[in-house]
Length: 222
Image 1: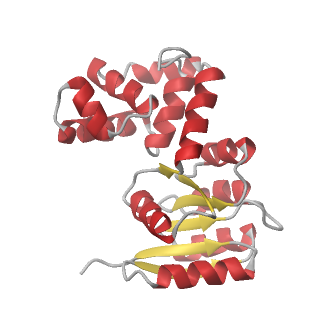
Image 2: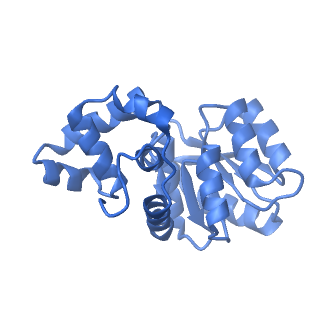
């Protein structure tokens, strides 16, 4: 039997922490190891407990969720952070991604979706709510920030891997990429792993940001 995914809850709302605790307790594959009422406490507990996943609110006293994410990942690099918030605001979305979050969900997310997200990021991938994913793609497509230094990294990946990265940036799933390139889905997964490794990217979401920032994908070419 595999060990449950160890989760840290960071939220300054007592009722929200209790609700999340009860929700996750219904899943034998997930174990809440601690709760924090502010960002500072969340960073400290992550350093002590090294949870697999931290559920992070954005608006908290002493240290907000964006800065707490940055400090938490510095203190516990193996932990994956999911931002769980009421506010679907571009400042929070892009601030969270820049800080290293692997997921961004709204608090109205269903319990099933939240548990799926925890499993997804614990496995090393990333997950955003559909509306957030579209906003990320639209923002990066219309407001790219060319990164000349980042472009040097593209030389480390093969032509096929560039094709896969461009399709990831277009929002395609592994299955859709496999169909577009007429290859097996397992081959796509291998390409994705190699891309993330060669470019030192945390997950698929950061691969999207990288593709737009380096100019591999440009407005009108999605």
